[in-house]
Image 1 (cartoon, each protein chain N blue to C red):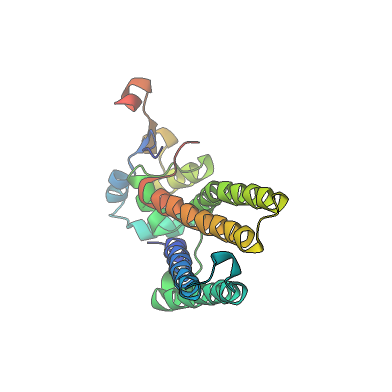
Image 2 (cartoon, each protein chain N blue to C red; image 1 turned 30 degrees about the vertical axis):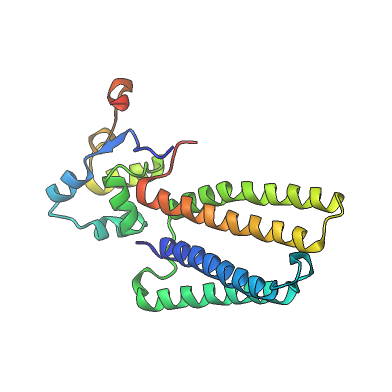
Length: 142
Length: 77
């Protein structure tokens, strides 16, 4: 497994675990309170911040364990990276359009923020999944 | 969706014919990771034309001795 593939696994795992933790916190705060009134800003910022720190820490750890592979990125890694990002990008667009529609419909900030957050999460997970599939089975013709 | 490339190759045979050259050795000589050499050998990755020439040069062999391209009928099977 290349350094880039390991890094992709870390990225996806951190995104998923962060989201589950965030959802648990929000669910805890939503006891007897309408979802739109839940104080979500601080937990969301903490989730995003700790996710970035955990991803960096994970990569440092992997680089320490597999020293020989550290930072090696060849033309195949670049192609797979571009492919995964292109696939994930579709969810960013969908999230942007959905958030725009919600803003125009004067929806609560809670929902607008979460549509954007979930779109980024799905973009990350889908992109990472496609990258891992490409590493394992090859890059599809498209 | 995900499918194997129609480019086949004789890299594995050529490595053994050239004094059992390792995948790591070949990877280092063409400037890629060992995993990329494995992916090429297994038909999971089609190298660029430039990389294909680099590989052929390492084996001192013409390009079509190293790489082959299956015709339509073979590609469908």
